[in-house]
Amino acid sequence: MTAIAQTPLHGALAKLDRDRAQVRAWLYVVLVVLFALVVVGGATRLTDSGLSITEWKPIHGVVPPLNAAEWREEFEKYRQIPQYEQLNKGMSLAEFKVIFWWEWAHRLLARGVGFVFALPLIYFWASGRLERRIKPKLLGILALGGLQGAIGWWMVASGLAERTSVSQYRLATHLTLACLIFAATMVVARGLARHSQEPSARATRRWAGWLVVLVMVQIYLGGLVAGLDAGLAYNTWPLMDGRLVPGGLFVQSPAIANFFENPKTVQFVHRLGAYVVFLAALWHMIATLRAEAGTTHARRTVLLFLLVLAQAAIGIMTLIMQVPIGWALWHQAAALVVLGFAAAHWRGTRGSYPRETEVELRN
Image 1 (tube, helix red, strand yellow):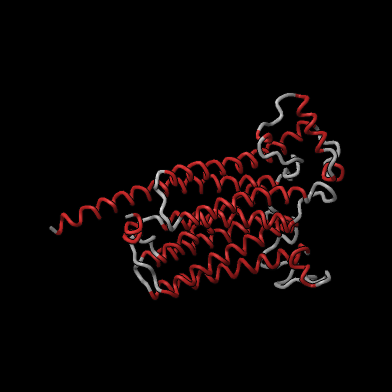
Image 2 (tube, rainbow, N blue to C red; image 1 turned 135 degrees about the vertical axis):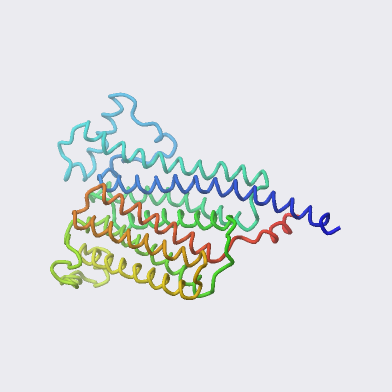
């Protein structure tokens, strides 16, 4: 009788596991596309390509210029903005095409990730494969994606009238929101996985959560550095301008403006942020190895610390070499890897979404 009574529950749990595996695989595909989108976005910024397309055409804009006349028309629009007049005057059509294709690829990936997320979401929802607990989360991620598109154009618009580049405030916001979407997607995906370990101690969960926050703040600071081209100056480490704490950090008024508009201050704060993340990851690793030795949670903290260490090394090399595009892209990609692993680790410390409770809700 016991075996018979358990059979319906076992069948329901098996179906739930199959549904979770399918949804999780879809979310991992979304993560890959998001990763590519952020890296191509970084290349677009590093090649100063972000203002090459001066209009926002969410539907029509998917089709690039198809003949010489359309290319000349697109190039003429670019020649009307300050970036061309002040920085690229005399640029050839062939040179324009290089920066155009970077921005077009970035926008195409942005459109693509919308379809990769939205269409399977509709299918999984309609076929009953989505759990109640994750439906609001997925809708929230979808809404953030729509907001991200609007912020992307808001960012580009800041460089079309008076500036020769986009606002560092808007660039940092655009990058950070992209990373928030990436982290949120990772958290949902990892919550659907079958974790081999029970949830960790409360202190471990708390530290894991703070690490995600710290990495996100550091990425925002990196966005400010990129927006101000602050990494192109003071290319020494550990000293900056010959000192551990350089002078001239608060030359602008009001003082708070230096944290967002003074390239020296922005780079210095970004360095400090890296030290904070490094020390937090080190402490988290040591504390978890002591409190939960031999657990999956402890092993993840070691890998997370090693990822942070590698990212710090890449950042230092990028700075010392005066921000070559290849190293800068590695730095941005590694930041996303650190964030993704930190988010997965935090979700792992909390365990999987409960299976039996979901089966009860479905029945």
